Each structure stands twice: as structure tokens, then as C-alpha cells.
Image (tube, rainbow, N blue to C red; front, side, top):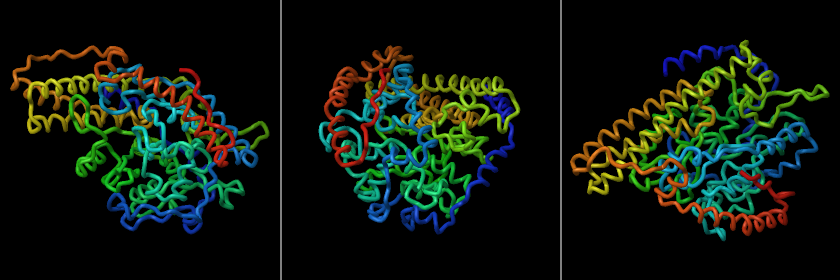
Length: 518
């Protein structure tokens, strides 16, 4: 299957002239101009995660206009296309459609609810409503840290400028409830206060200090400011579409990109292992687990398009011509360019028909999904086998190698699964990562078989029925009805208070949209 999929990649021909011409059309900001858009980097940023002392301090001179609606008058085409992401209402309850995830994320909030992504307009709404953020009653309550707001909108760089990184990242998620109220928008990617922006130029910027650190690290001294337009166009998406972790060693729970050894699955894993980082301990296997976020930038950079200068913008926010002949960047963010915007994207470089390319994309997706589910099955069994070993009296010394293999297997699954569209961004990389995950899972299960035999446990063990989400939640000890009831009360009582406070302070003009029924 791997050979079949790799051979089908040949259809993705090179020759991306559109990207180069688009880059030539736009003026690259000088290093000095762009530096005005950035906050200073700590001098040791390329060597290690920042210390508490190296976190960015408050910058009262940096002004961020976070209210997206304020740009509608001057940039109607861009604004209206951004606003049209509100039409992307559909999302899928992923853990309900694949209950294996409930087991794999046992002890972690993702086991309660994980949905497919949708339009940028819903970024604040969805993080408020999802079960993972709990139902806090005050600013100090709830299960999640303040860092969980970090990708959700331009209020985040505004708050970092006002409070500094330590002030922003410290505390609970609920602390930002009445502050982070504008969804992903203009000031996340553009310096909206600059003269260039007023003149209609892109004025691209990286709005979060931790992203600047990571990009400075990755390019070995070549900052965002001195990068060419193609690199900048890709980098702005790395504000959010990346793998990251919360660094608790500073006491602030600040966001760090784990790129210190590289961006591929092995390099990030090695970094995490060396610093002995874990996102959580699995509730039944007791393995020290890693949760991949959404390593889209990493996957894209390793794929055919990334290696040839075709950026996220070229495919998902392609140039568009309105009825008056004006050409502008479409901010609707098309999820599947091959099916939804073929003529303005794929057809600019590929000479195959739409039907042919759509079939190719679907085949990649099918191939990746098929082996991904096989890996899930093996990981789920490994978690239950580890529990059986613990129940039989296995020791930590006996279990440590098997648990590390489970950690590595699931990390590889998650790196592939959490990356949006990895089946098209880098299908060959996806298949290799999943194949290595299957190797790690087999290693874990072989080690567990020896341990189980040593403790006289009959094999195969009896695996619980997790054929539905309801059964899986019960097996994993999750009272899903209570979680839903608490969240419903939170949405009804707390969120209106947040909206009222934000409107009174002038942070939003209208409340964020509500969620359509599932």
C-alpha cells in the first residue's frame, strides 16, 4: 500500500509559477520596517525554550486593534470573505464517530469531545462550548490554563502587549473569558496600525512572540522580518497551525514550539523525551503520553507543495476577482481547494482534470485513513494490556520500556491524525510516520506479552466493548451526561456575562456567534 500511494504522488507535478508571480507582485518589507512589527526576541532563543526572565515584557507602545468589524469599511472584499467563514457551520464529532480515540486519550480532556475544524469566525465560540474547557464559574476555576486561548484571535497579542507573556499565560482559561472575544481575524496576520496596511499592502506580521522565537530558531538566524514574501506568507499560518506544548517550568504555562532538534516526528519526539515532557499520564496504561496539536505547518513544509514554495495562502486563500474586476485575497479559507476552488488553485499549476485530481486526493485520504485505523486498533489493545499487567502486579521497572513504546506509537498516530489534511500536504510522510507507529505499537505489545506471561495472565486478555462512544466513555470512567449538563449551564449563565463585560469595555461590537445544533 505504501508503494502504491507513493507512486500516485507522481501526479502532483511541479512548476508553481503562480506562487512566484504572486510573490513578485507584493513588496517585501525592509528589515527595519518589519522589525517595528515585532517584539524583541530573547538572545538565547535559538538554544532553548525561554526562561521566565526571557519571556516578553509588557509593551505599551505596541497597539493591536482586535475588533475585526472595524476593518470592514476600508477592506470590504477581504472582510466579507472572512465573514463568510460563518457559513462553514458543519463539523463532525470525531470521538463519537471513532470511539477508539476515547480510549487513546484516557485521562485527557480530548476523550470527552473532539470535533473537526470549521470556519475562523467560530474560533472563540467553539473553544467556549467544547467540553474540554469545562464549566468554570469564576476566573480561577476550570481544568484548562490561559494558554488554551492562544490561537483563538487577535485579542491574544493585544493582551500579551498589555500584560507581557508571563501575565498573559499565567492563570486559568476562564481568566480570559471576557477578554479573548474576537475570533481569528485581521490583526492576527497583519500589522493593522501600519502605513503599509492603510495603503492596502499586506503588512504581514507574526503577532505572537513565541512564534517569532520558533521561526528565528528554524531559519537559523533568518528572522521573519528578513524572510522573503513566500516564507512570510507561510509563516503567518504558523501563528496557530503548528505543534506546541505548554512549558510549566517557567511557572507561566507559556506556549513553546518543540522545534529545537527539527520539525519532523522523530526530532520532536527526541526533544520531548530529553526534557522528560508529558502532556498527561494515561488513565489506564499509566503511560506518559504526548498529545500532538495540529502540526500542519510542519507537515506542509515536508511535502511536495512546501518544498516548492506553494504556500497555505496559494491553495486555501487564493486570489479572487470580484464582479468589478478587482483582484483580492479570498479570506474565506477554503478547506478542500481541489473540490471547492479548483480553477483558482490546482488548475493554475496542474494540467490534470478536476476529476482526476479529486480522485487522487481521495485515494491518498483513503490510504492514510486505512493504515491509521490499524494503528489505532493496536494502540487501544496496548493500553488495555498495560492495565491488565498493572492489575496483575507488574512493577514500574518491568513496565517502563513498554510504556515508552506506547507513548511513541501514539505520538506518531497523533502527529498524523492531528495534522489537518496531511493526506494531501505530505501523504508519503504520513504513511511513513504511521508505519513507524505500527512498529512501536508492535514493540509495546510484544513487551507486554512477556510481562503478562510472567504474571500468569491468560492471553489474549478480554478487551472491553468500546464499539460506541457511550460504551467507551463508560469503560473509561467518563460521566458524559454530567459533563454536558455542566457545560450547558455554563453556556447559559457564564458566557452571557463575559459577552456583556466585553461589550461594555468596547472589546467587541457584538457577541460571538452561537453554535448551530449538531
